[in-house]
Structure formats: structure tokens, C-alpha cells
Amino acid sequence: MSPRKIRLSTTPTQEALDDLQLGDIVYLDGLMYTGREGVYKRGLEEKANIPMELPRDSAANFHCSPAARINPDGSFEMGAVTATASFRFAKWLPEWMEKTGAKLIIGKGGMTSKDYKSYFVPNGAIYLSTVGYGTGALLGRGVEKVEAVHWNEELGLAQAMWVIRCNNMGPFIVASDKHGDCLFERENAKIAENLHRVYEGTRPATLKRYGETDDRSDEVI
Amino acid sequence: MIPIDIIQKTAETLMDKAAIEIPQDYLDGLQAAADVEDGDLSSFVLQAMLENYEAAKEDRRAMCGDTGTPRWYVKMGNETQIEGGPIALEAALRRATANATNGVPLRPNRVHPLWRTDHNNNVGIGAPEIEYGYEPGGEWIDLITVHKGGLFGTDYRMLFPSDGIEGIKRFYLDSLVAFGKRGLACQPAIIGIGLGGCKDTCMVLGKRAACLRTVGSENSDPKIAALEREFKEIGNSIGMGAMGFVGKSMVVDCNIEVGYCHTGGMQMSVHAFCLSSRRAVARVFADGRVEYRTDPDWFTDYQRRETVEWDAPAMEAAE
Image 1 (cartoon, rainbow over the protein chains, first blue to last red):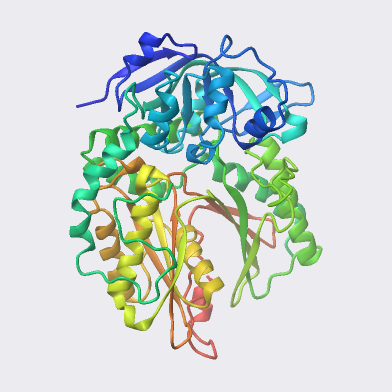
Image 2 (cartoon, chains in turn red, purple; image 1 turned 135 degrees about the vertical axis):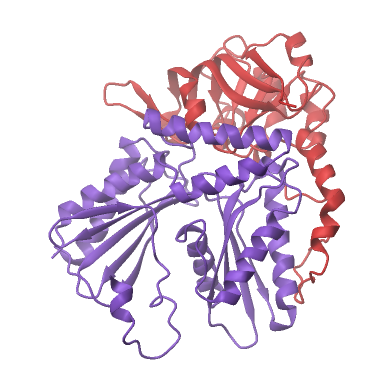
């Protein structure tokens, strides 16, 4: 069975968001902005003015820095676009959502169902994962235009806030739903059922690591 | 004498090729994995990746937005001389890295670990890494660039002889499962395993096993080669595929390299060279000829030698 494919606006209606199911494939239209450590720190901890009208212009926050350059004439060259792992940003996201009204968080690897239930669901937000990982060239094709890059001087190219106009940009996979269920945790649970078989005949290390666990349903995030 | 301007120009071309063109051996390996994958979501992911490599080549854009941490492996024949010497060589490789970062473009990933200073060119303290190897005979230089992702999928552990193969398997599985969940390792990957050496060389061996050997290659020790095949099979029977979804494609190939270690220990490292297994190679000759390829051919008999002296077969290895 092949997954369902959906086109979605980066300023989506709540109805469209509520309709998304785990494993749906999504293609995006509209403005999105990148944000990772640098943007969150500057926007939240240093309380800099966010240089966009959010969420009016965009409700889609992409955990990404592109392979891109700023040309001497001020224009942009954007090649490939790939997400970075999102779990590292959990400490900033609740406040960010509150401040910006973000409805789509896009990145790599998703967050935990605890994150989804505690601040995604109350904000009506959904997590979209990139595919692969590394469909950077395909996502790059979905960039119609780089509208702006903010905070480049302060943060450098890799951490700057890039504003991208998407046209049928994808694929992305729906990794959380309106109930706060987590696609990756669902898959983990299915896989964990069989893990004991593949571990059969192996041997725990003689020298333990402090704090080590043998619980195979555990995760590293 | 190898002309320095040809080295820099070749290095720039290699940076571009590595970022954009997936090596054929990896592509064949992934296609084989896609052919047998039956998980719905895993299959979708692998098909998307195969389309992505095509898009990258057609558009001449980087295959992945995270263009890794570019580095260089340099190998020379024993008679090789470089115009300007080793200092000129390192300057040429640093220039090529900076120029290609702006040119392709690549993501300027390299920053200071504490101050997060970004020169926007992937050059800084200790970056790019440049590592060297030598072969007996010949006047040529191999330039190898590897753009490996840098955050997840690698681990090290001190095991002991009493841990045995069963202990090696346990740590191998632990590494695959830990970083395979949610696809943090960007699998299916070329898994490199380093066994022995000291802690640092164990890491180096494993990384080179992942990055400097091709899919389908085998260790020259038949018993290690058998272990490689067994480990590939084990990795693909975890029940996990791309992105950590239910599936059967975790390992495109498993490469093991060994080094002599302390008599009491059995150091082990595991490395995952991801869905964007980026490497490109060129040999530059003294007459200015350049031959491009994707097989680094790093682990020759000479590199794996175990005796004090090295004699006769050396001349063949250099050809």
C-alpha cells in the first residue's frame, strides 16, 4: 500500500492539520523559514525582534540550514536543503510556538510523543519529517525563491534565518497527529518485538558503561 | 614533480563531484536494497532517495543539504615530489575546500567548538582534516575527498578478548539500533568497523573502513571477509529499515578493518557512512595527467602489512 499524498499550505487551516495522519506524504506551498540553535537563542534568549510577521507570513518552521551562498550582488544561490535532528530544540520550541504561532515544525527524526502531547497538541501543531534522510536535491527543487536571509551577520550562513518560498516542496512525512501520537515511536514498538531474536547469542560487554541500560525499547533522544 | 596548480584544480573538481554524484557502487547497493525492501514507508523512502540522486546530478546541486565535514585523504607513491612541497599541497587543499564551499555551494558546516565562529568556507582550526598514506614505488598523488555527515551513528567501546565475537556482535547491534531508531544514522549505510589499534587508531580504522572501501569490497583476510558478510546479514535482519521504519535495509555493506592492539584489549568502533556516502578520488601524475575514480583503493596489501620489512609484492601494489 503506498502512502497518501497531500498538498498543504505553510499557513494551513486547522481543519487541514487535523486531517493529517501518521505516514501521510506532504508537499508544501508558501513561505517557510529556517530556525535552529542560533535563531532560537537570538529570538528567545536575547529577545531580538523577529524580522517577519509570524504566523501571518508563515506558520512553518524548518529545522534546517541549506547549502547556499549569498552572491556579491545580494542575490542567493540555494542548492540542496536538508533538515537537522529536531530533538535538540525541544527546550526552545514551546516558547517559540507561543511567540510565533508555528503550526508546522519540520525537521529530522521527530520529537517524543511527550513533546507532541504537551505543546504540539495544545497549539494545534503537527510535526513533518523530511525523507531519507537527505532528499536535499528534491527539496531544493521545491524552492521557488529565497525571499530573504536574516541574522546572517550575527549567526553565519549555517545558522541564519532563511526565508524560502516553496512550490510543491517535498516529500515530507507526517510524524505526529492531532492526538500527539508519534510515527517513530509506533515503528520502534513494532521493531522492538523482534529485537530479542537478533540479539540471541550475543554477549553483554565485560566492562560496563556508567548508567548503561539494556532496555531495548529505550531511545537515545 | 606534480604541478601544484593541477592539484588545486583537481581538488576543486573532486569537491564538486563528491557533493553531487553518488558513487556507483553505493548506488548499486542501495538499488539492491530497494529491490527487496517490502516495508511500505521504508520502500517509499528508498525510492525517494533514488530520485534524489538523479535530481542532484541533473541539476548539478548537492545531493544533501548537510554537506558534511569535507576532509582529505592523500596518498603518494614513494617517488612523488610536489611542486612547493607539503606546505603548498596543504594550502591547495584548503583553498579548494573554501572555493568549492562557495562554488557548489556547500553548507559551511565548520565552526569553532566553543565560540561557534563560522568562516563560511569549511576551513578553520584543524579543518579540513588531511591524512596521509604512502605506497612503495611510483610518482603520483591520490587525492581523496570524503564528505561524511558528522553527528550520529558512530561509537567506540573498549572490549576485551573475553568478550569474543559475541561481544563484538552485541556492540555492533547496539550501535545500529541506537542510531537506527528515527533514522538518526541516515541508513541504509556503509557500516565501517574498526577492531584493535589504540583508541584513536581504532576510530581511524573504522572510519576509513566506512569511507575508503567500496560496497562489495572484501577484507583480504578470508575469515574477516566472512565476518563482514555475516554482519551485513545480521544488520539487515533487525527488522528496521530507512528512517527507523519497519523494514530490512539497514546495511548496504559492512567493512571491517583491524590493527594490532594491546594484548589485554579488543577496541571496537562502529561508523555509519550514510545515504549520502560522498567520496571522490583522482590520481594526478607528474606529467599533469588526471584520472578520476570513486574507489579510494586505500587498503592495499602495503597498508595492511604485518611484517617488519616489506619486499617483492610491493611493486605490484603500487601499479
